[in-house]
Length: 339
Image 1 (cartoon, rainbow, N blue to C red):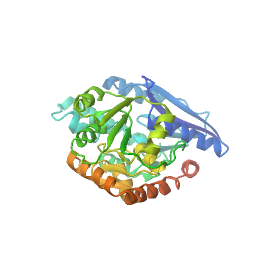
Image 2 (image 1 turned 120 degrees about the vertical axis):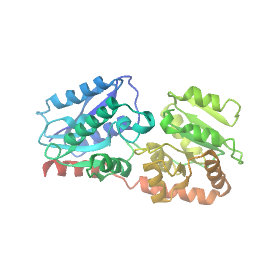
Image 3 (image 1 turned 90 degrees about the horizontal axis):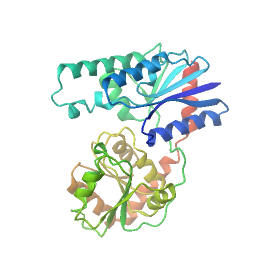
Image 4 (image 1 turned 180 degrees about the vertical axis):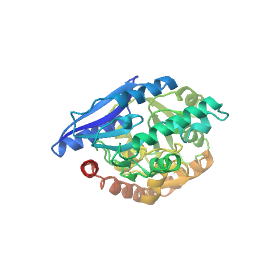
């Protein structure tokens, strides 16, 4: 069969977990013997008018040459095709769980915009236009249930590739990823003021919050910024670190958790960190704390003082990551599209 994985990508060219998920999903269909390719739109969400243009683009997109269509992120599910299924990465969170935070005193016009986006998403994802909806995690499915009154089965995506390995732990924490306010890297930086153990925090990545984070760490010699790093450097730091502190707010999934587990390392996360917290709790693969620097610091010290227990947590996470299969996800999507 001919399969299209329909996606959106940033006009800036920036890539992250979602983009790697797209590539892995296309490859999974190909590995099953199907002709698969990504159909994408490079765009931005800088204005509401541009967002609506994106919705209209996918509504008008002719995909009749394909047998199966797999939509992913908003607004790709606006496509019209008899073999459409969705593997939901996320909706536009600014109109969902982050709306009140971004617009605490939203005027009527903004509320109308929010209502319209909810309506479009619901219409795009409901039957008969979309034969089935699956999501990457419980956080995403819960959001869909609350806001759109719809259900989505959860299929945790594996790593797109797994070059990760474990080395003996050295006295540093490692946190890679985009430096964005929603990732709350500032909580970890502030926690380093309270960590008693002789540990460094090594941060890899760039982003909008970089300047503020460097300001917070200007008098902290135990905080190091690497900037953008190669995959070899990334893998090496994961392999040698003691643990990975990952404290986002309501994270959709969080490949950082999987990469840490694949490297045999425990994860320190927060009660409100969404899917990351759920996975760590389910696998007993780390520490879950309150979202405040002192609690995070206490969890870090606990892991440092108990190396055998820390290692056991990392191994449990490692076993879980290795149990995930892209082939199972691709087969489930194909079965739903053919039903």
